[in-house]
Image (cartoon, rainbow, N blue to C red; front, side):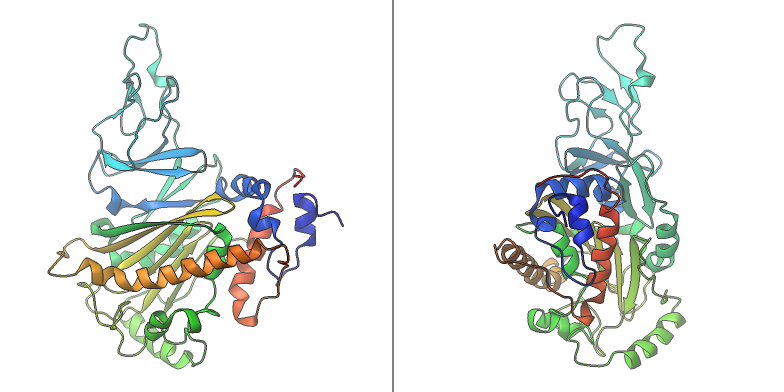
Length: 400
């Protein structure tokens, strides 16, 4: 069997087992992933809370592309490739800011927020500005979450928008605010982070704080009785409770699950850390978890939301951007303290980052070989099967 090319590796894949080493370490595999996954599917960029006012923008560096995400004059969200239509210079040099107009710093061509070229100084009178707008990027906004696609014909986003609307509406992200952001650069492959967040096989020994907050996370106690009871209460509050299952042909899912009895929030003491968010009136919404492959994870409790944007930089480098969101009317120092708001996921996240980096270092070993998943790692196996199916769309034999 030929494993010297990507099709050979794909043919050799055994469902229910971890991937062979080149899937985690090969530059050629990484480039194929960008072609068949990252440039095809929808990528989480940020939230409307990142750009609350017209002209507010942020940039997102994805592989070789820099993308401008900017708020329009009427509240729209536009996304453009960050490359001037004159000679290609970056236009927005900062990671975030405000711009009444997008002005190229090289020769001062001026673009409107929607990407239209407004001024091209010293160009001939017959120069057609209409044919030199910024290159647009596909953008979808679902209840305040901003997703972009670098594909001219990306997968249909309608199912994500429909499935997520009822889950997200109570949080009123359109009137939320960013309380804190933190970035991590990890020496690991992006898929190892994705795999880590699809199982709690490791939670008991690795995450004592998380297990103290989430019933069943330690895999040693029953959850169904508490879950059934809480679902009745959640439905009574008008909260969405029917999970959105991940399937072989989808790229998203949603789940609501309970905190331990007596635990009100993701916090070290189990007590609330901020005022209820959006339409929530109390601290009894459990945990809402959303995932959109390949780069979006989110957990939300009644009083705050935590988002994770994953960006694959190379086979051995992954950037994690974390954002904590609170109600727009929450006042720092009165309704929440930033250190207390962030400590639970800072601790839990950093435990995960260490695990993922250790996992990658072990995979680099000359004696690494794929191993079987445990039954409790079924969701990891489903993710890896999904990944393999996407990679099988590759048609060119790439030699290692």
